[in-house]
Image 1 (cartoon, helix red, strand yellow):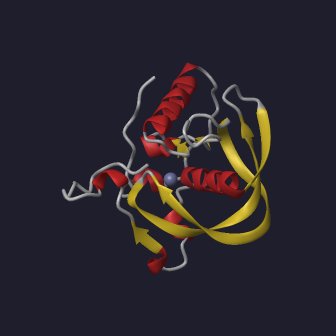
Image 2: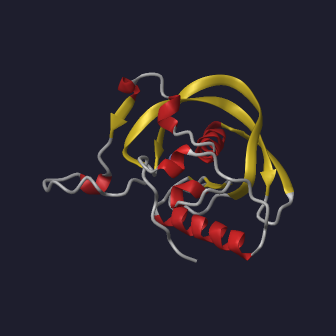
Length: 180
Ligand code: ZN
């Protein structure tokens, strides 16, 4: 397993529709392991394969259950995921992206989604998610379709610059710090 560098928003791979997964062999297993390790290394809540430069329809999502242990929540791995149903009211919620570091924005999202896809062995799965989990699935599924959360923000003033915690303080740090 390896932590892979995260692709930034100006990379065209993030604007392409990723290819469907057809083979569930060793290469896919390695890719998924690297994605999980990379997500953990940067304390992300989710990651899509194009974010590490691989144009494949694979996403991982893990929301911490216990704040002190970011890896405590259920890990979702989905290949060829699709949103098959949305419900609840559409709302705006604050979102950030590892590929757009240093910013957050209010993205429009459905509050409840049903997602279907295949697990890492190719078995069909279907998940109904709400709240933050629904938001995370929509964000990651957008990635494999070449969409970034900033496309779901109504106006530029709803995107804000944030200063990562490690950059605060008397010394002006570099703006190249990775976002969490
Ligand atoms: Zn993202």
